[in-house]
Image (tube, rainbow, N blue to C red; front, side, top):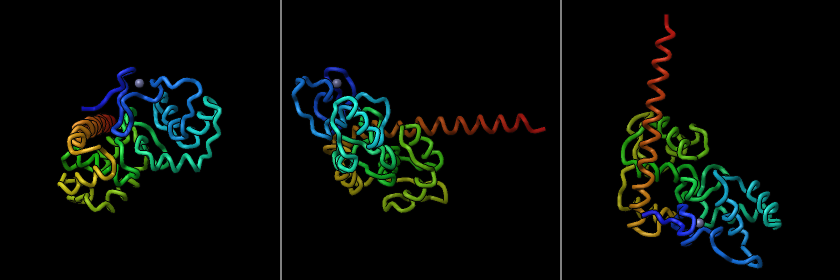
Length: 215
Ligand SMILES: [Zn+2]
């Protein structure tokens, strides 16, 4: 079961509290930490941001000048922030999974959650549709290097969800325990399925258009 804020009903990741920070009544003199300020900024944003942009909004809205290098460290360490691409972070509410900190870990989790073999171009399309930002070539390279990804041929791969892999995902911070890991798998597997269907529909459409213009 994915938790939701009881005030605004936005979804909360496994490492966020019971309420969004923005829905907590802390009073005007409450001193938020730099990480909390970044969460407050991201809670209001429709999409993930870079550390540079988060610092800019914190300065504008909270008059706090956080060094970008310090925020970079917090974003990488604090599990409330979800990796969305090279130096881009968002929250669970942006459709991102908690835990992974690079493309290989992200790809491994999503492919295991999907539980079927998939063409890498199709998988890249589905992950990008889910909100991740990267080059397809980088995904291919990261998936080639990852120890848990099995390649069936040059373009198709799969990730069998073993007990060891479940421990790996829990250690990474995808979920608090085995039951909530199942919730995350149920939540994110269909995201890839939806993206894959759209990828093939577009491919068919492109083939039809190409055959129509041929003499
Ligand atoms: Zn809320």
